[in-house]
Length: 130
Image 1: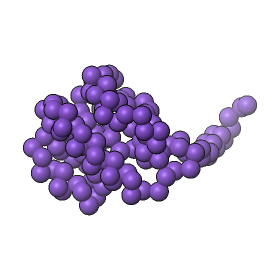
Image 2: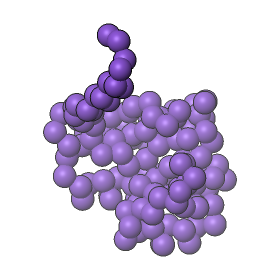
Image 3: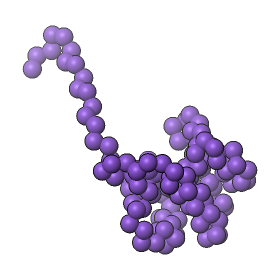
Image 4: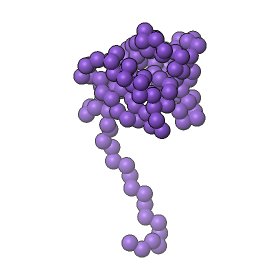
């Protein structure tokens, strides 16, 4: 699944050289993280912004924003913004700022964004030869 590379370049330019911000490929797109917490990203042509539960309703007042439903289930606290809502750099910068402000309230994740948790192995089926 491809994502809007032009939008990614604009975001990189606006984010600058902040070492606290990292970029990772996720969801078939790209995400930007602050202290290991995702705050904005791109899925296909849409901007994804993490606004938190408290900022969700206010974000939806923008005519180009809708609740993120990446998995088919609404994700309260996240919004998708259609391309028309990020056409101007000032609009894109505002959305990035909303996501960044929310992420700044979260505790940083140790070791960056990657959690190193072991997944339990599935039990072998009875009677299966090894």
